[in-house]
Image 1 (cartoon, rainbow, N blue to C red):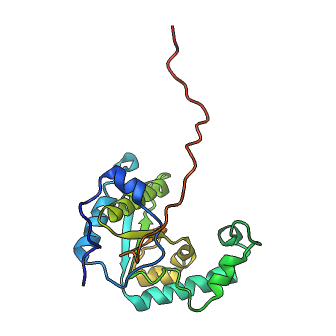
Image 2: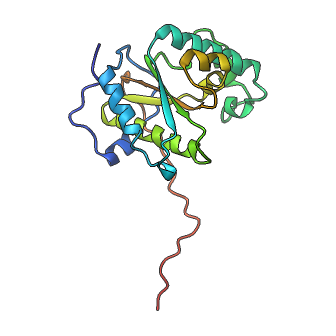
Image 3: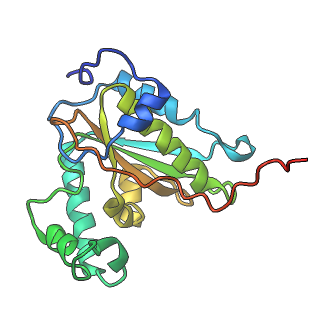
Length: 210
């Protein structure tokens, strides 16, 4: 088993924020357990409302399980294409066009052949569970970037992860739900920079001048 891609130094927080990319092409190198534990430890240091820490995690590195999850998720999304039309709609394309064709392709794996999937789950501990879990996701993704790893959130996986059968297989208790699914791996080459718009500031209330 291999370690993360070599980096000259672990990135600072700001470097990781600006260098993080959604990676959709990975080398077959597996991620070792100590590295995954570092990512999970970074995740649980996220802010949490009332210090409830409502998150829990499932780590999947069994490629047979990942393939089954991908196949099941694709079948569910295609079968419920109307219900998921907003997720399937590609900008500039007809509704359900490009993404639906991709999901119908038997060769397409929704996890992009990454060898590690981390499912971030939320326990029923109040109204801020989803927000807390997404903060944990961001910590995990930035930590992965700092270590030279790539990540990507896989929204296509969530319908399958919410099914009772998959929850039983992954050990997700009743009342606990998957909030996000993140793949982690060693990037295959560089991921292009995607430009971002400048912050839209609706109003800036500066101190009154006297």
